Length: 209
Ligand code: AMP
Image (cartoon, rainbow, N blue to C red; front, side, top):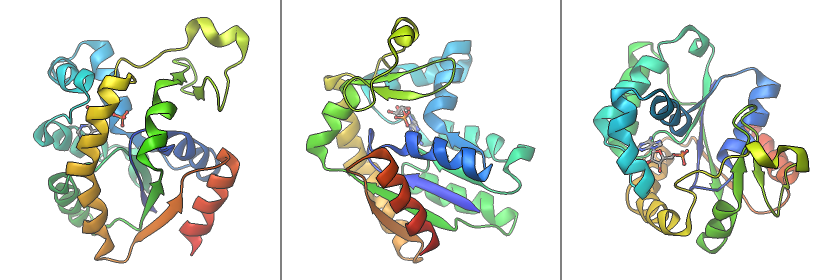
């Protein structure tokens, strides 16, 4: 099954996708995580992406599409995957369709997490990640255990300034991607506000519905 987790930054895509990964055994493919790994490793792609990411701007399509064409050819993708943060433009969605068509495959379900803009900034500014386990915490909503606080990472683009740009990018370039998939009847909308467990239940119900 090929799934897309879709929604604005801070909607909970990563948190929810990680849980589904544990239960379904599908790989979670997050373009943001792959880009951050490139940055950390100092690759040419990482260096090129850095400036865009820190400002909250989208990395150019040509870089993302090349990166994903490579990733989706990996053997762990054969039984399906959960895409998190991709496609983020209609051009990326079209390129993904072309890649899938080569294997006579397709996107089965696009899960759209709905969260109002007013909540996004608060969610993102308080977000912290554990670099060792990948677990995502929130200082208020999902407080990290005290012994972990030293090693938690506050992403460089999880600031109020960058979030404003990221939200604008979402509305301008990414929201139209949901429309693109709506025409095929594969979009399921899920209320993204509430307890993490409750939202997860809604996602499972939406996938089956
Ligand atoms: P994320 O971890 O999904 O919030 O992504 C962090 C940043 O990485 C974004 O703000 C973009 O700068 C970049 N990025 C991640 N995925 C994409 C994508 N599919 N297209 C363009 N830029 C991306």
